[in-house]
Image (cartoon, rainbow over all chains, first blue to last red; front, side):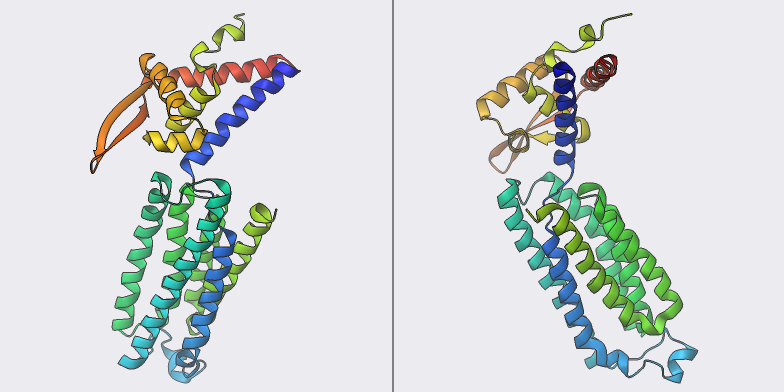
Length: 211
Length: 99
């Protein structure tokens, strides 16, 4: 019996090191909650831009087309960038606190792979969104953000906590669903980047960091 | 039938060496500092175990530089992969055999 336990412990050790060496698991749930709050803040700030078009007859004939003047475009762009940067900074701060407790480092080859693999689809999506806005295809911005963000998370999920995969799939499905209800894009964006992040972050915090 | 204990690899009879092998098994390459952080051992201890594994032909050592600092990375060899898998299989058999 003692012998058996020894071998089981060895296998457990092997599994743990394989996991720890290939995945960055110190991502804090609190960063998810912070990102969600940033997104809800962003939605409330650009809400008036969508509000004027919600339910109007032009919207229904072609919900993709929503012509914003350059000032409105700038507002949308600046809000998006500010939202991303603040969410990113919060993520780094909370994760940094967590690495202090888990004795992990904030930058190593696993983190680099995580950043690269999440970054490629993310940057591609961001470039596409800027073009959509230039072409006045404003209605497509929200679903495209959600779809590309979902794909980015899926692609990065191999290098971090496995639960990220489910968040990615949820964002992707929500984005695809939004294609059918374009006029509610801003609401879907708020659900995807706000609500889902908060739920995910809270679950992760509850599961791994509560103690 | 062969006794599974004989199939256990003596080289892997150390927590540090098992740790090193586990890490290089799932990563293309791992550097010294990452291994140190992962397994939580002293430099000297880690270096001696790495040497043993290298001498057994299980590890491929690449010495490089990042700026002026040396950066030694380790990767698993084909025979290392085979030996490690056989070791895990043997462990598994022993656990099953003891039931």
